[in-house]
Image (cartoon, rainbow, N blue to C red; front, side, top):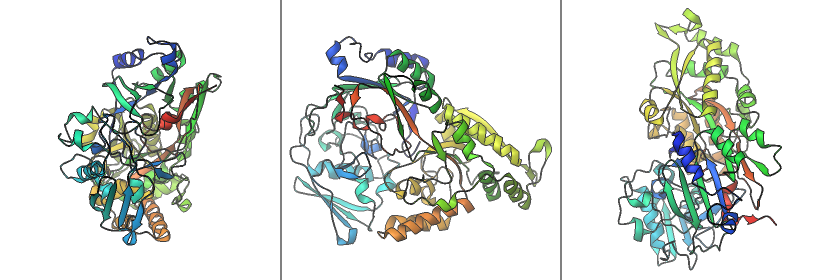
Length: 530
């Protein structure tokens, strides 16, 4: 759950319908052995609300339907995609110029032009478009076309990470331009320049894709693939074991059951994906800084990694993982229950009935919601409540749907997941800046710290690596002193796939994974094993 929500399909009937409707891998299906050998069926936990980049789909890259001006390689280095080269940067970092690749067509056969790029960015930046990631393009003053093959971005201020924002998928104006971007058919019937086209979408069941005959990058060996939406982890593992799926994203405990399977391989991806408890400043209890600091000291992060993630992760001492160059090791801290109790004692939270502390008649008790059906988040929430209890804080854990949780996010705690790749600005600004408090899933805790805001702005606007590094170190230290979230774990993503293709790799992944990220991030490059 970042700026774009991913919903889980919940109905058990959908599990069966979504998967059994797919051709079983390797056994021919109904279309013959040759066709089945060129297809892949993958089980994932959730599906996007929309397939329109205008509303946020694919904004971080890896969409199979669309391309951006740039893309990322295995190591997340930027490379040309719809552009012929990396941008030419001028005017002290305020002007970025891209030249488009010749001969690119959309999947309907119409040519890509610079005007399509302009239309895409202007629509995303339009306040009438319901794109909660709009703040990510705050630096853009104007985007304009020079002829059919050149696009120029004029920025309000130098933004060191801007090129990485241009992985945003480009949509065709001749199709989407005549529609309301919020409600139009393009949201479910997309047209793009990517290696695949959407062949069908049964909501809550499956999405099927087939090779785009107009793709500029060549013909993929995987001619078609299906994303089967199977919310239940155990069902996904069972279907994989039975042969109904080629691959699946799985939690650590279930992925471990396939380790000795010679016909399948397990892929582990390090990630920016972290689990944290939001602690809204408007809450009667969570609004007290002493409560937030005590919870931070009381939580046993390493135990969560060991017991909940089966070692497939790392303690989270802040929003940035150890893999990020901006990570500040100085914020690493051990669990300290004595310190948690001291903080509460000094703040006037005294031991009370049932071991729950109280202050001025207010019990140190609050509700923590987690999305129903997410076993990993449930386990984190229960472990968090257990740790909090040892300090005298009562955390009442409740599972609920997002429809129930969303209206409560401003005042109740949530076991949330976040994490964006590419640059520290990408994940930290939307998580922490006070201007985005309550903007969808942005700044869910309504965190407001002037020191952090100032550092976020400095990191976003400076091109000096030393200035940016100092800004992000300041933010991480400030979050220890004045936490708005209790950061728990960074999660490794695990995938199990039938070992019949070459070319599978993983990247350092964002929070949102499974559907777009995974060993299939470059499925168009896979080749059959010989």
